[in-house]
Image 1 (cartoon, rainbow, N blue to C red):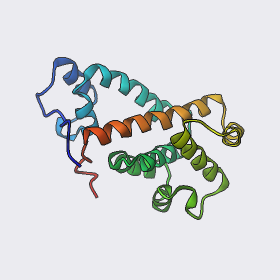
Image 2: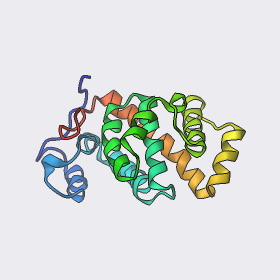
Image 3: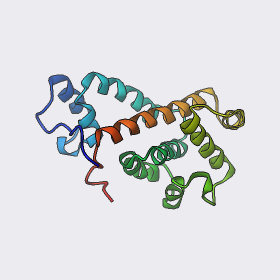
Length: 179
């Protein structure tokens, strides 16, 4: 992969970009590449962070299911960056290494319980057709309330958009996560 938009280095960027990165805290060299790359467009970055914060930290989805959604979206979108970040987060959310490995195979993998299989089917439908079948809608609605179904749909869309940007900009997997 060729880096098309390099991450900001320490001291680089305008006041708004530096302010946003400072709010992330910690040592600048440890700020993930996604943030230092997106900070090259501070107005967009600030708004992207807002929705991302909701979907990652305040979502009504259970954390394990949220990470299945993100990892499957990363796999379908070919985003090595999202996959590397969320494989770690997914383990913290309760996914086993075997489940994480199966996510890329999707519905074809053996061992998925019915609820997870329905979730994977819905992710694939949204990714492929930008809509859910009535059967998937019913399955999700039987499992979750309206807020959760909305958070599910927005999570697939947000992480698809983010994967597009990561792939297009050539954002490299952070060194601490590289395989």
